[in-house]
Amino acid sequence: MLILRSSKANRSAANAWHSDVTFQPEPPLGSILLARTVPEHGGDTMWANMYMAYESLSAPMKRYLQGLNALNTAGRANFEKAYGKLYISDEKDIRSGRLAESGTEHPIVRTHPVTGRKSLYVNSVFTQNFVGVSSKESGRMLSYLFEHVKKPEFTSRFRWAPGSVAFWDNRCTQHYAIADYGDETREMHRVTVNGDRLR
Image (tube, rainbow, N blue to C red; front, top):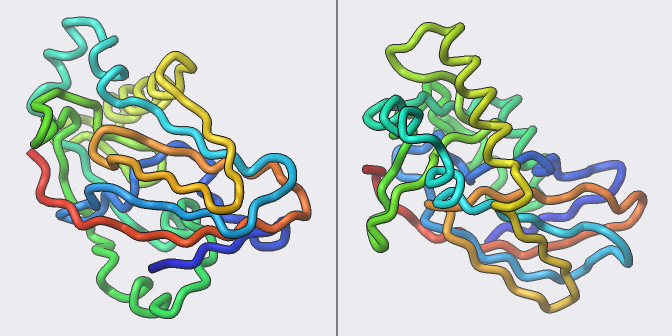
């Protein structure tokens, strides 16, 4: 279990849309957060529905993306950007060579193993480029998709209270921890559920 504490001086930088640790060959199925200490104001979490993000794309765009892979990496800068400072017992182990700095390729469009529905699987924290596509083309397409997934109609917002629990499916969502709580402290206990290789 991870204990995540953040304040103004040590703010989790997960306030960017992302899916967790997509640099791993088998990214987590999902995560569970239990709120222990929450700010009086702010500190909400948002989720975006990647089924809807995919389904709203035009037919030509879907055809272009189908079958393409993207490289996801976990350089130290990316890891810090996504998770900030982690106050956990096994922090040293997490920051070790297991981070797969060389990266992992995943489908840009993935099929959920339970629902059979397709969703977008790229995020601005870990996804670096399309595989087999020029850097210029890849960059422009990723910029478009990173903006596309932020549309308000794909999102929901959760207001935390002490004792609140959230459990999300990392395979078809992205999330965003909003860092808008000034000098206050936010503490969460987190459990990550193992996943499997993407298809």
